[in-house]
Image: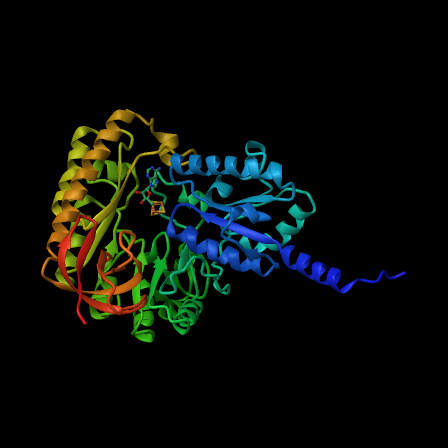
Length: 474
Ligand code: 5AD
Ligand code: SF4
């Protein structure tokens, strides 16, 4: 017999249902690529009927998109998992998933090491999430860490998480074939593959339609982008001459995007010195909507260390590349990544790094102590033999030097006018906007009647080593 439902009870059931919509919370660590991947994962999880929440306490599913690049990054994630394990004692239905590089590196071991984890998914297996969710909701644990030769998620429209509605990441390559000896990425993100230019243009068109003003093309090694109909970079040699003729390299892709979307600002990251060529530099110099900034990690200024890191360029080749960049684009900003304390790094090697920095005078940089990563060639071949204290003091020295150079660079803008895309309110003052100029420098100025998404000319009147301060020209 059917029980009669009183109107107020009906309403309650309706509300319960709304309350029962499953919610997911996602947190990302590490590189920009991980943040972009989280937007793909959000799209996949949303199509399974979950809604996203910014409050992890109300989530039924917590996902951590993790990073393995240094030990510290992994420790941060493990500590975060401890926070969530407390939550699991309160909410028995809560499921916790680990995505990204740590998932790939640790695979099934994660389930033994971190008892609160239900789900482990590597960077190439996100399409399998719907099946894996079914398994965990049936009370099983689920793991998929299969790396792919093809996957680029080209057809998935990312859900723009905590977006400012103005700038967005668009991934163009996945994986890395470079095998720098210190780096875990080739193991966690697999072989290098490029995304179909058509799907890249489509994604940018969608962003333009939503009024976005800037895209950053992402890849571990964007300059080695190569589309010849799908497949791994390493298999390009085997294809026919005819297919090679129609292949799209990074310079061609940049040109295509710059011409198709003349009003969109284009950035890209990361460039590898050995793959960046004159064609790319020329393309940048010709198109005004390609921002004049290159993130060009070098890692060390010593040829001995570069060789031992399996970086496939010398110090001189790197400096010559920068010379070419500056010849064609004198106002192009260059930033770097640097590692101190790589195995066998001597005081002289360190001095060569300081000397290289002195020659380039980078606009900014990201500097790290060497962190030994299990499985890498450096781990297998070398003892991590630079004492922690020396790593630390060398790091401090390069950080201090970078600070000096950053100030030298920002100081050179005093009295000049720069074009800024407004991104958000300044952290320091509600009365000011914050945006970036073409060279990727943060610029703050009084709001006046401008709004987020406006391009504004700003006259620079003051600076710190990290920020330009000025007045918007009306
Ligand atoms: N230790 C320290 N820094 C590292 N990086 C990559 N692997 C390591 C490691 N094992 C740095 C490099 C790279 C950046 C993304 O992280 O500088 O360019
Ligand atoms: Fe790692 Fe080198 Fe590839 Fe960068 S280029 S992701 S440092 S292996």
